[in-house]
Length: 148
Image (cartoon, rainbow, N blue to C red):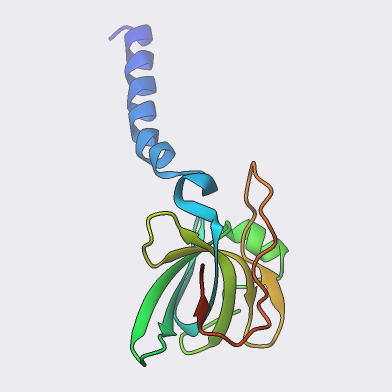
């Protein structure tokens, strides 16, 4: 086989393999809304530090006593590590207060701008690339959740 066609085939296969990863990554503005700030006070179900983002699954008690599970996206593990997070920063059962922004589609998804950890430290949840967000809602409030 000639080297040029072989190299072209390898390049095409590499591009096709990378396409799902490129397509899966999205901007903050495509999924979350600066006009929908939220504060979630809940219990950690799951904590994952995986690239390209980290994720918290949090059970939030509603006013009627029912529980809603929220998926909260945070920054890349390297960003979180530089800002005080560790893999053992939270564990299932820990109580957290997350301030950030709701998903545009109204689902129970949010982007964490700041998280108050069980030890009381407040750490950044993630950087918002290419935009300057308004300050997150005040996380000192004990409210379960608040949104406009």
